[in-house]
Length: 606
Image 1 (cartoon, rainbow, N blue to C red):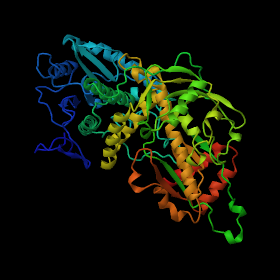
Image 2: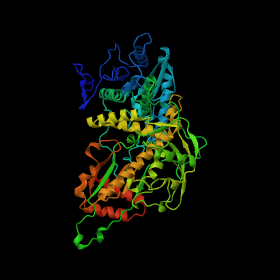
Image 3: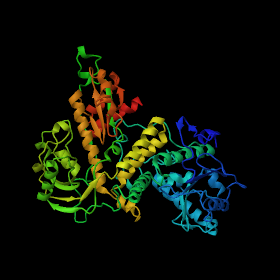
Image 4: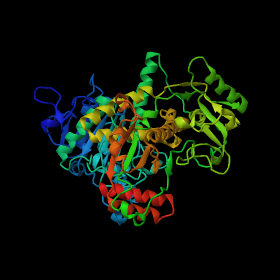
């Protein structure tokens, strides 16, 4: 391996692409095989009498790495099972692990293509793994892009890098970076398309694809070096090896924290799932989601270029489109109080009394965490700004709606309109019943701290691949809290926490609303579009000089905080661009037409 990605001759940590790395962090937890050679993640090559050019030779390597007779094994778990990565088509070909392409494979849609190739790979592997059984290994599941082997108490996870895209689809948060072999699936992994949570940047009008690919290099040895660097970075800054998905990696990080607390005998430990009560009426309301994300597009009032007077000729009413969003929005919402234990059913009067008790306490006390069945007023009865969406996605303009909301929304619905709330009184919610958790605490505080510090390091050092991985970890972990099928193992069931997910999403949504209100109060700007945490603004003459101030809505020392509003970018709009914007918006009748028009402007500037 090149010395730039491994240990330096002096033994000091080397740097890769200008990023400081502790190259030795993963050396006791993973091996990398490329071009018949075996490397530690640090770049050190292990001496071999013969290259790894057969399954028999690979089985011998594993036997040496996990020899039960050795007092200290070469490979040990780190959050997950020790890993042996097979990097490159050449390495797989040496092992006889290149499956034939199914008939018509290239013409299939992405999902069917992955399924067909996975079946072909499994069939091939099933016939070639006998050398492992000769060394006492057993298969824990059908072999595929990952082959999980056990022998006594020892376990190892073989990962076939060239075929990782079969399982991961378009998951760009994987340790391998952009998996370009797969056709892009705009909704993400098929398993939980509707459950994924993100910062909103992928769905806003101003979204764009990052031109810098995070894929591994084409050269196998260079790819092995970069993979080793990323494995070391994961172990060093996240405390775990990457799991089969970013969401599972997030679960591993949480489990290590909770197990350490359990051993120490102090700190909040989560060991039970927090699924919705069986007696709870579901779906929660008009939409099959407790706390949907914020999605709103406003049709602006535009002066057609043809209607400008002679004195106004050459004047462009819009000089810039500005996109503002939150810094790591959902991660910034994870340190809130979250409920645990068996939820208790309460009548409406009892629930209201519990809320009032919290509000009237001499010291600040959080509202009882849980779900409240409220009757939300019709939107037309509220005194909220006309340019804002209704305060809660379950609300309807012309009628009251009976729905479940989290304690986060109860609190925000009763906050003043000037603060981003709905300005309602508790009695206005007409709470009928509630399911409240007996205990609450900051269950994800240490988890958030780990990811926040890792993210800060990767952002500062310009490590795009690891920054993307951190983002995918919190997006997928939060998103998959909703689906029990993601956590079927008895060792993972406690990660099924749909009400946590709802509370985190509600916190992000309400914060975005409060931020939009603050921008309006200080600059008089109304968002044309809001998706999750991002706002699109049109800036006209006079305000364009204040663009730098949009990045300084709060004190400078708070700008790097998670969830903090930031100015992501500003795109100039010239006269031709404005005329096209008028044509596209005035020629349409639906919010989608406005969204497409805004997207065209951002795309043209990229």
